Image 1 (cartoon, rainbow, N blue to C red):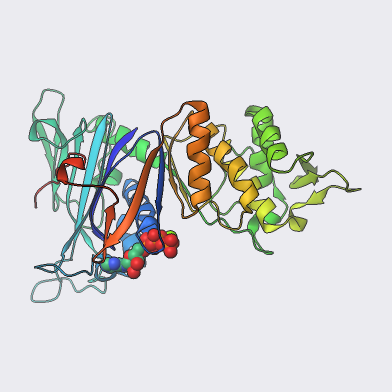
Image 2 (cartoon, rainbow, N blue to C red):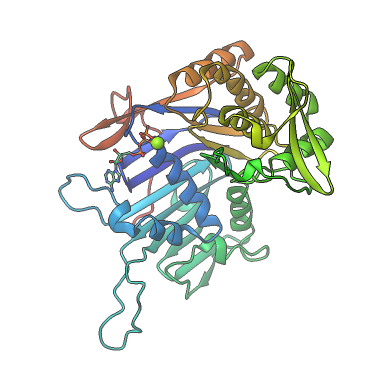
Length: 381
Ligand SMILES: Nc1ncnc2c1ncn2[C@@H]1O[C@H](COP(=O)(O)OP(=O)(O)OP(=O)(O)O)[C@@H](O)[C@H]1O
Ligand SMILES: [Mg+2]
């Protein structure tokens, strides 16, 4: 489980250290930095699959991602990190060293950020004695079984040591950490419009994990029926739409969602469902996954849901929290309240984090002093 998330100089998150628990609800007014926090977690996950530099470049590179607020010196370093029960990880992005000039290979990628430092360590905080892997520019040292260091050179500035050096023999801890991060799952504004992929019939294959675009909704629902908690699926649908049942039909290999509603002569297909109904089914499929991830991050799941559906959605989230750590980013207070209420009923703790903006900078509401902040150290450049 992740215990601490730390972000520095990423958009409005100038210095943000957030404690995390099993079930976390992040709220805040418009523009306070909720989606930035979601994206910071995504960028960390991208590091493990070797895509963080590309993802940052797609956002407009460091010039756009770096905190643009007033400070004594302009921000030049953007850092992301987390620490969990087992491992901690931090990465430091900076401006590239220009490759123009004598003897240099010319490049058109001079705006791509570079990874300047990267560290993994055992336990909750970075200490020299706890270091497992330590990278400075192209040089990496990895702790060996006898307590010494194995050294490698030549890591490219746009590659993460997580994706390049995770070797079962040389760096088994790095491999475990990489697989842990790769199992994080993110859902953000899955489409439900008239042309949404979730509305089309598709060839079905066993789908324990709903895809990001929801195109495999029917297969994911059928997989829950066959190997997952089919009772919870029926209960979730009946809870939201009393008297309604969801079924999946196989039409010559193509799977289609069918909603059997009280008072209708024939079931409705996915193409006929309202946006809100389809979205709720997508959330049911995502949250009742038969293969729970170590971390599930949801960005504004309340979008296009009627207020009546927020309580059933909260119950689905609480159900998922039994097997998964959850970060719920929401600007719907009724959803946050429904989660808090359900949690009290189930005697589960909720870590509620309210973000506020002060002088262009995202802060955690209610922090009186630095002592309220979790302990965190960045690797030095
Ligand atoms: N490079 C930057 N430096 C400083 N602030 C930035 C930078 N880039 C974006 N911002 C600001 O960060 C703020 C946070 O945006 P974000 O999208 O995370 O807000 P949000 O809490 O998700 O809001 P909403 O509820 O509207 O979705 C915005 O006000 C934006 O102007
Ligand atoms: Mg947002």
